[in-house]
Length: 70
Image 1 (tube, rainbow, N blue to C red):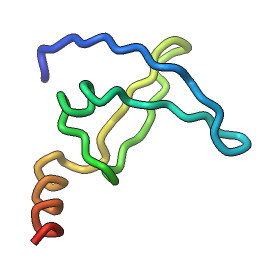
Image 2: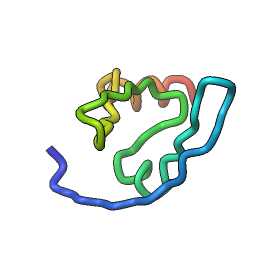
Image 3: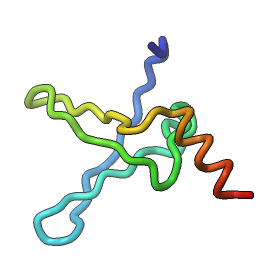
């Protein structure tokens, strides 16, 4: 587990009807090596906390990205 606590504030925006948009700050995305197109899932832990979970193993995503750039 990553022993890094990083606080980043963001604003919830309106998206398409029935949806909201949440931007992940670039510094946070870089710290966890989040990639464009990576599949994630939001998990509601309680009324104050959402957890973002990767659906693919990080190493697999990075390997696929390397193959696609060749």
